[in-house]
Image (cartoon, one colour):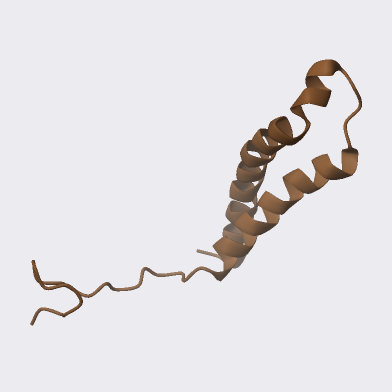
Length: 83
């Protein structure tokens, strides 16, 4: 996969995560103000969306690109590799 396509896919996924998580967190943190029709803290709202975006992007870009092999464990023998 080309680098540009990977970055675009990562950013799009991070936007979706930020919208879902940020909305849930905003409802938790400022839901009372929203329901009462009062003004919300714009800085808190912006950070509530920005943080999940940055965490998702960082995780996607720093994760290993290929799956790491897992050791084959024999049944009943935890922590030892089977031959």
